[in-house]
Picture 1: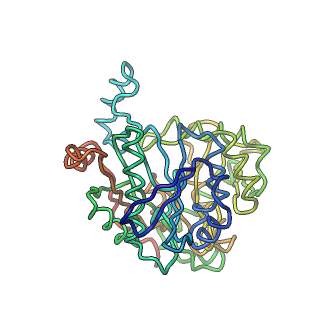
Picture 2 (picture 1 turned 45 degrees about the vertical axis):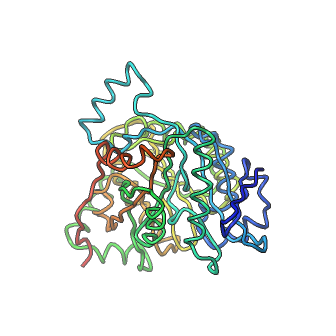
Picture 3 (picture 1 turned 90 degrees about the horizontal axis):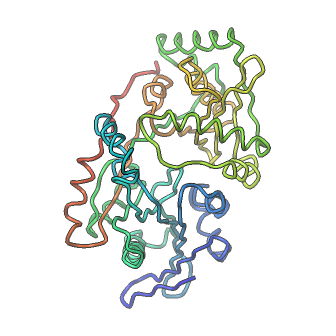
Length: 383
């Protein structure tokens, strides 16, 4: 543990290198106000799963009376700075990286939840002004970046309800830019039949025909809470999808991630297993987060254009309704399929800056030139 104190800072920060070193009573008392993605158990899974080259840090902020009033997680990681590059640039980078594998890849500091969305990326006591938290967090991130020689700091993610928090970072010299948008589906229906009936005829017909076609092809599914013993198989399925992804690639999961998610989060984590004539051919990984169900990942035994993904997406929606979730997060990419099921596309913003003042003015423009994100038009899916 290292203690960082700023003479004029309203909040002090204690930075920890292991989640086990954070006083549980401090973390848990604050994290209960936020997403499961900010829970101690979730970060412990991330730390222990050896995903990519994440080097995690955890910061707890204290007021003048030494009361814990805010917390956040951050990490250093090697990231492609053209991660959302348009297809032509991505293809060109692919050619260059055959010779220079790390071209346009930098080790940087990121603040936020590494594999899901928590907006804003910290949790705080409601009695504390979030502006004070941003001020203290900015000091920690910039000090760490300077000490470790990290070129870039990225704070993620800011959905529309966290625009004021992002603006606080912008006032401190960060640049605002777009990330891939998220997708959400509100779930007011009592059962799957009510949801299907609420669809406009075109989208309802499309869903019903596709499910009948898959049923005729012998496709079935089961929902399970305990999938630790399937961790190696599920991770291998996820890798098939990851390696064929054309829109976005970032974290590389491990069997330990699946195993620990099942064992440590219990019924909060679920997997929908998909079978064709009894053979397991894919899965969808889900995380219960209060009234929300988050669709984290999808995996397949074999990459193919056989319509299975659409069946998976439909099943995730119907399962969320059956589980009584009030909202479903459907994640990034494959927007057209998710919109056909009624999902709303929600923009996500980032805040980034260089750790050296002389180059910081150019960072925002450079990032925007390298990256393009889609902005799908809304669809009127429901009656």
